[in-house]
Amino acid sequence: MIKESPSKRPPVRTRVHRAWLVAAVAGLAIVVAGAFTTMAGLLAGPMHREFGWSRATIGFGASVNMVLYGLTAPFAAALMDRFGMRRVVGGALAAVAAGALFTSVMTEPWQYVVGWGFLVGTGCGSMAMAFAATVTDRWFARRRGLVTGALTAAGVFGQFVFLPLLSWMVERYAWRAATVTLVVAALAALPLVLLVLRDRPTDVGLRPYGALENEDASRERYAAVPGTARRTVHVLARSARTGPFWLLAATFAICGASTNGVMWPHFTPAAHDHGMPATAASSLLATIGVFNIAGTLASGWLTDRFAPRRLLAAYYALRGLTLLALPLLLTAHVGAPLVAFAVLFGLLDVATVPPTMALCREVYGADSAIVFGWVAAAHQLGAGLAAFAGGVARDAFGSYDPLWVGVGALCGTGALLALTVVRPRTAA
Image (cartoon, rainbow, N blue to C red; front, side, top):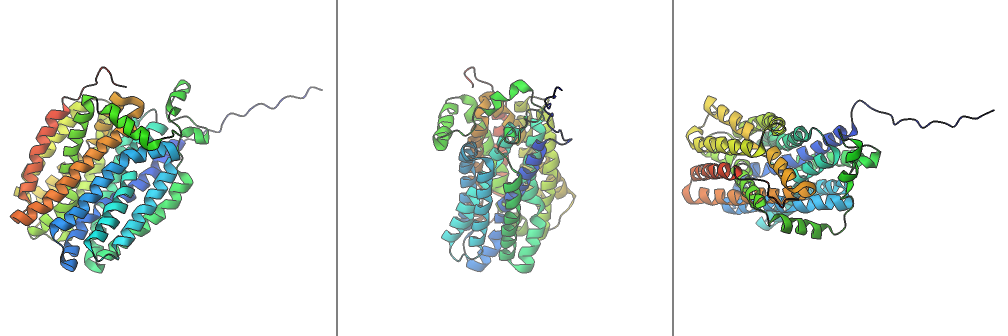
C-alpha cells in the first residue's frame, strides 16, 4: 500500500491584509502623539497666570519641543531599521507619558523645558511623519498615497479633534488634569503597540500589501542595519549634495512655520486677545482638524494621480492667502467668515505631506524614509522659530497680527520653491 505524502496546505488567506491592522495601530499611536503636540497652546495662558512667566519664556519651551520633535524623526526612522518599530514606538509612548507627568508637577521654567520640551518633544518626534513613511514603505506596495494620507490624517485628528475636550478640562479642572489625561492615553495605547505592531510583513509570513513575488527581496534590503546614527548622518550627507533636498527642506520649513508654529501655540491666545473664549477658539481648531483629515486623504488620492510639485505649489499659495486674511477675520464671536477660514485652512493644512513624501520617494528611493525624516526636521525647525517669534511679537507689539502676515508671505515663497523641485540625474 502506497502512503501518500501529505500535501502542503496553502497559507490561509484573510479578507483583510495584516498591513491594514498594522497601519491602524500605527495610526492610534500617531493620534496619541498628535494630542500632545497641540496641548502647548492650552498651557500658555494658565502657566502665564499661575507662574507669572513671560510669553517668550513659555514660547521657548514650546519651540524646544518642536525642534527636538523634528531632529528626532530621522534618527527614529533609522532606529526602527536597527531595533524595530515596536520597540521604538513603545519607548516613545513611555517617554511622552513621563514628560507629561513631570510637567504636571513642575514649578520652574527649566522643568517645563525638560518635561514638555525634551521628553514630550523627542517622544512625539519618534512617532512623527517619518514613522508614517516607514510603515507605508515596509507594509504597502500599492495604495501608498492613500495610506500616507490616512496616517497623516491620524496625526491631525489627535492634534485638533481632542482640543475642545482638553480645553474644557483646563477651564473646569485646571491644566494639570488635562495633562494627566494625556498620560493615561499614552499608557493605554502602549499595550496595543507591543501586541500588534510588527516591523515587516516577512515577520508574519506575508508580502507587502499589493506586492508581487519579485518585489519581496528589494523591500527587505535594509533589515536590521547596524550603525543607526552613522547611516542617518550618511544619508543626510548624500542627500545634502543634491538640490531637491534643500528645496524640499525649505518648503517644509515654511510649512511648519505656517501651521504648527503659529496655529498650535498662538491661535488660541490670539483669539482670546480679541475677546473669544478659549473653548470657542479650540472648537475652531477642532474644525480645522476635521477638515485636515478630509484634505489629507484627498491629497493622498491626488498624489497618486498628479504631479506632486504642482500640488505643493497650489497648497502653499492658497494657504498663504488664508493666513493673510486671518487678522481681518478674528473677532470675539465665531461667525461665518471664521468658520470658512477653518474649513479652507483645514483642507490645506497637512495636505502638503503626501506630495512631499512622494517627491522624497521619487528622488531618493530606498533612503526616502530617512531623507523625509530630515526634511521633517526642517519642518519642525521652521515651526519652532515661528513659535518663538510669535511670543516675541506678542510681547513687543501687543498683537499677533504681524505673525499672520509674515507667515502668509512665506507661503508665497514656498509655492515658488515647490515648482522648482526636479529629479536630479545622480539621484538614488
